Structures are given as C-alpha cells and as structure tokens.
Length: 453
Image (cartoon, rainbow, N blue to C red; front, side, top):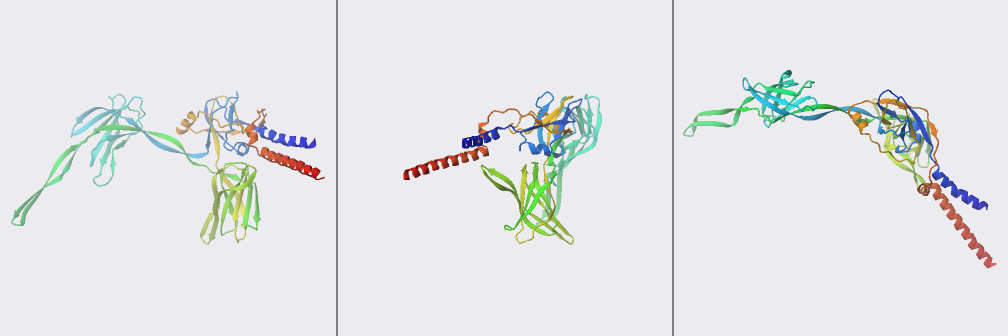
C-alpha cells in the first residue's frame, strides 16, 4: 500500500509541476499620465530581465481599463539624422528670350508638393558653363530674387566633373523663373582645316583655320527636390552590467582557471576581465548550461585570446570576450593557463544591450506592465504610427516603473504537451519502468525459486 501511494505521489508531482501557473508580476508605469497624447519610452530593468521570457513574448502593457496597449520593443541605440532627398516634378510653363542672347524659363510646382530646396536642369549637353538667376513667386506675377549668379557646368572634356544643380534658400513658392543671361557659348569644331603650299618637296607655306560655332543651352526638363530629415537607429548602446556574484577556482588537472558567474538574465554580449598581471596571453572560452533531455552539460558560445603587454611606452590590452546576445543565469569562463601561473583578477564586468518599450500614451490614462507568464505567445501589434513618429525625429518621453507586485495566478487548463516535454515526466517514466522491470524480475526469480524447491 505504501509503495502504491509513493508511486502515485511521484506520478502526480510532475503533472502538477508541469501545469502549475507561472508567477506573473505587475508594475505601474510612472510618468505616462499626461494631458495630451505622448510618445513614451519605458526602459526595461534587471527585475524584468530576471522574470520575463527569453524572447520577451510575455510583456503586456495594460491600461487602466484592462485593455492591451500596442508597443514596439527595440534595442536602446543611438540615433542619427539622415537627409533624404525627395524628387518633385516641375512643369515648364513658359520660355522667353531676353537681351544679350539670354533666356528666361518659368517652371511651376504642383500645389500639393513639398517646398523646393533646390532644382536640377536636365540637359544632354557636355562641356559647358552657364550662369543663371533664380526667382520665386507665389502666383506667377510678383517675383522675389532667390539666387544670383549660380553656376552650372560640365567639364567632362578634362575630368568627370559636372554640376547641374542649384540650391535654393527656404521658401514656399510655387513658381520659379530661371534666367540664363547668355544661353549660347562659342566652341571650336573638332575639325581643323589645314592648307599647305609646296614647291617640289619643300613646304613653302602652311595655314590653319579653325571653325567656330555657337551652341545654345538645351534644357529637356527642370526637376526640383525637397530635403527631408529622417531619424534612424545607429549602433546599439552598450550597457555595463555589474557582476556581484562570481567565483574563481583552479582546475590543476586541466591547467585551467574557472570563473563561474551568476547573474540575472540580462541581455549580455560579452565579459571584460581586468587582471593585475602586467604581461600575458591566454586562450579563453565562455560556456553556458545546455540541457538536452535529462543530459546537462556546458556549451561553448565564444572563444578568444586575453592578452596584455605593458613595457616602457608600450601599453596594449585585449581583455574582452564577446558573443551573440545571451540571457542566461549562469556563465563559466575557462582560461587555459598551460604551464603558466594563474592570472589574478581585479575586476570582472559584463556588457550588453538594453531594451525599451515605445508606446503612444493616451491623455489621462494610467498603465502597468505585466510579465512572467511564459504561456503567452508573442503579440502582433499595429506599430506603424510609432515607427513613423520615430522616422520623423520625434523624441520619446521617458517613463519609469514602480515596485513589482505578484498578480493572482489564474487556473490553467491541463497542458498535456507541456507534461510530455517536462524533465520530471521523463524521469518518472524511467523510474516507473525500472520499478516494473525490477518487480517482474523479482516475480520471475521467485517462481524459479519456488519451482526449484
């Protein structure tokens, strides 16, 4: 009877363990309640890293009415502003001749087009130089001078140098008048007429005549452009995560130093080791626990060389081991000393990425962040508005988090797939098979013993 109860208890424990609800936490978002809609940034901290899923699929932003609020999860990174050029079509409205062989072209922009920051004259000509004036108008009647004596040129006969663009000062004009004071240029033909006078075999006289021709500026079209500033993410900002719990030990048999590090599951990308030894070079590797079924072992995720050279005016150090982002609770650094004495370390630090949630906070609403329920799947939110605001250069306001409270766990339905994938189920299944096999073997041996007697 006791054996049956023991077996039943062992069987029921993994069922409970596999289906027990995860602890879920809730923290108030501070600084998001304002009298207007705002773009907010909520930085995640070590408390969230410690209790959230590895892919952050369990993060939920809930407003005061219990409604999920869409957010964009992103690495914290520096931002830079890029200048994007948008092309604007121009329509040639009129062309007239001016004094001294000049021309004036009137070009218009569509009413809904953005303001013009510059224009480009499209011409198939080569080897030229012209000077021009640009005026602007709102109605095509009253004109204001914008640019004087601007140069467009093409020196391709000598080098690949040309310019057909003219920048404009800030304006809101819809009509532009481009005046070229002298729209023709005199050029020599590529053919040279040579005349020679001979007496016998002797040249008595030579004359050369180069024909000149006038070439007018030919404009196929005029295009405008508008400069648009776009803020984009630059390199991810690297944060330093303090290591408060690590232990250094020596493996004399394998001539290695072992550094075991326990840390919250922050998004690490490397370790920096600062040694008091002035000159050294040691190969090292970073390992993390890897569980496959009931087999637990350490998996190497990075290899590198730690080295330092300090001699007279030479000071060189390479003391960082980097790897792809990991969120583990335990790491081991293995340093191969060979026959060298072990290194002594003055400090060890971790560095890695940081993450934040971006969301549109509505006027007068309070929010809270919930996390810890690993049964949730990654949400799919509409974040087009957030992305456009970031591209336009809007800077989010910073929000912070209050103290964590445990959310009352809800009853969950029996998850048979989770039970089958649990380590406890596998261990109990093996133990039960051993018990059944042992009991069967005992019965067989007992029968054989009774038969012998």
